[in-house]
Length: 418
Image 1 (cartoon, rainbow, N blue to C red):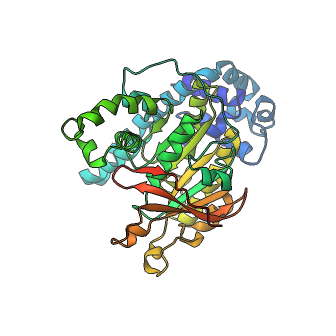
Image 2: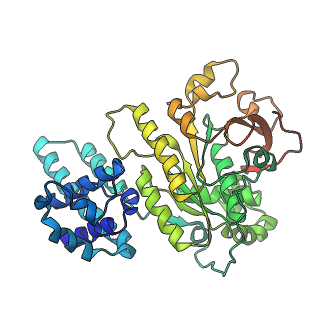
Image 3: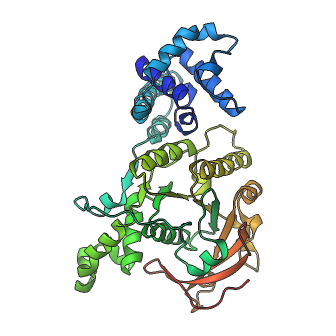
C-alpha cells in the first residue's frame, strides 16, 4: 500500500495539475507522513505556489518528511499514466480501513443496524467506476469505426434561435438551466447533450439522481418518438413499425458518443478526474459537461450544514473546471418553492437556491416554464426558455415544442421575444 501512496505523491510532484483533479483527500492516505505532505501540497496549490521538487525543499520542517532524499525517492516512483489505478488502490484501501473503524465504533456505542448500514453505504458510494458509455448501454455488441466530425467553434444547443442569442455553449463558460420539478429540465438537458454529440463534441453526462438505464430509455423515447409508458415493456407495447425503427435509433444515438456517470454524490474532483480520463481516451473530441443537478454535487469540504457556503464553493468550482478544461459546462438547478406561491409563476433569478454566487459565476442562466403544468386546460404544448442572464448578448425568451409523452424537444417557427 505504501508503494501506491509513494507513486501517487510522486506523480503529484511530477504533474502538478493532478492535484486539482484527484479525488483523494489527504486524510485518505494511510501514512501520517504522506497525509501531512499532501496537506502541504494542497496548501501550496491554494495560495498559488507551484508544487514541485524545488518548492517542496523550502519547507521549514523538511526533515519531518525525510528530507530531500525522500522527496527524490517519491519522484522516482511517479507514473502519471497509471495515476487512475493508484487512486483506485488508495481509495479501496481507505474504504476498508473506514469500514473497520465504523464497525468498531458501532460495537462500542451499540449503534442500531440501520445506522451502521447507512454509514457503510456512504463509504461505498464513493466510486470511480460508475461510468457507462451510452454505446455500451444501447447495445453491447455495437461497435463501428465512427469518423471524427469536424468541430464547430461552439457547441450547438440544437435550438437555432437559442444559438443565435447565446452563441451556443462556449468553451470555458458555465450555463445554469433552472426550473421547478416536472418542467422538463432533464429532457431539455438530454436534447442539448445529444445535439452537441451529433455536432462532434463529446457529451459527458453526470447524473447524480437518475440512473443510467432511465437516461438511456429517455434518450431512446425522445429520439425515436416512442411513448415513454411503452418503454417499460417494448416487446409487448411497441408496434411493428416502431420495432423496425429501434435499431436505427440505437445507431443514431451511438453516434453521439455520449458518456454517462450515474454515481450519487459525486464531487467536482471526481468529475474532473473522469473528464480528464475521457479527454485522453478521445483526444480529437472537445468535451461538453452536463450535470444533473447543482445541489446534489458533494462538497469537498464540510460546511456544517451551511448550504450557502457549500453552493458558493461548488459554483466557483464549476467555473474553474470550465476554464481549466476550456469546455462548456451546463449544470441543472432546482428552484425554490416560493415560485408556487406567486401569481406570476415565471421564474426569476432570486428563485435559484442560494442564488447570489450562482448568478455571479454563471455566464448564461436559462429558466424553463410550462403554462400547461399550471393550467391543466391549456392546449399549449410548449416550453418557454427564458434567457435571464447572457454574457454574450441580449436576454429574452423563446418557445420550443415539447412532447410530454416522448420527451422530444423541437423548434418553433415564431420569432424570438427580446
